Image (cartoon, rainbow, N blue to C red; front, side, top):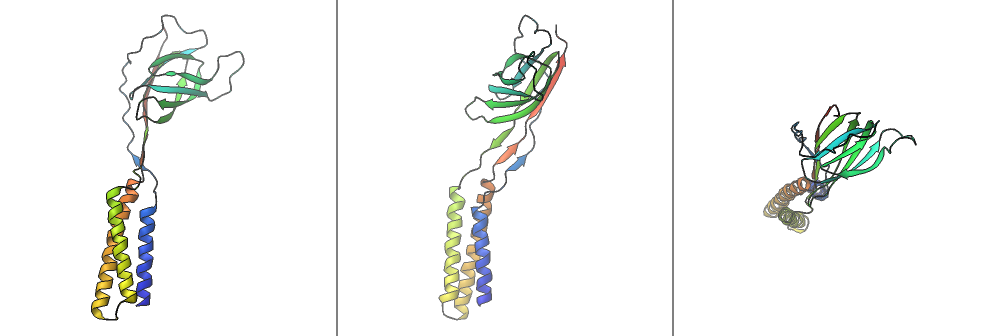
Length: 213
């Protein structure tokens, strides 16, 4: 009897632990790259200064604030290779090179994103379907109530086994309550675990360049 009780108690604690944990975010399939179509962004009438390339930045999810960081330190005689660029959709002139772009959505439910950009002395089109992070649901009400009920039934079952009369009916009732309570607790805990994981979806980029006119 004691051995069975200890094993049941161990399973119950494991179930409670599963219900309380917040798991690693799920990874969703990446977004589809934007179609390689010239976005409706007006180009400046004059060409960029010598030594600079021109970049058209556009996002599928509305306005995004864009900050760029150059892969190499810039020289004092060149334009800066890092700093805030613009808010999409926009056109900027930049020194050629590799950049890390930090994009922050300005829409109501938007988030942040990071991507890479290669600039040449040409006209580059950069179209981004930004990645997303879906925030986890904290303590869903329904599964939490179910799990709480499971814990109560499990506790009653343990108390029946420990303090009840040593009869077949008492043992049967105790194991039934404990087993049913554990099953309910584990089921609710797994649901809560999944709801608290959140999800990550990688973005996708379409980019190409054409000669400057």
